[in-house]
Image 1 (cartoon, rainbow, N blue to C red):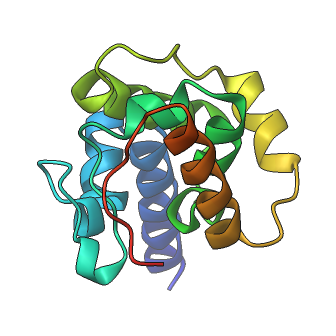
Image 2 (tube, one colour; image 1 turned 180 degrees about the horizontal axis):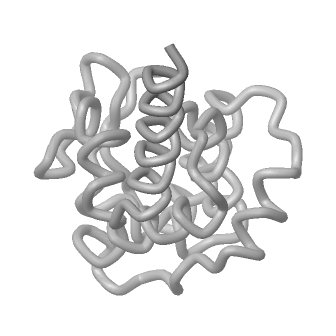
Length: 142
């Protein structure tokens, strides 16, 4: 019985160590691609916006960066602040068109701590502000 207990504990520790060492690519695949897809095109009809032609514009503004840290898949994530920054930076590299600076661990920590009461209303206001600047974002039905 002791041997089984030791084996189980070793598996738990190994799994935690493996999870802590995951790359941004692996975290994107496991935590983002299910909705946003591997190509970043999302599913507008399901309320999942596409990244191309949008994510860079959103991340280029202070309000947009706050929004990105409060979308459901990010705010509820068990990833560390650094891992979240790494995944967001991967997304910016792929679909951000060079429009925004990289996220930093301390920035992620600060923005996640700021409350956003209703992320859908917050996005609507953000989209309207960007539209007034002549920037159109991907379709989003909410």
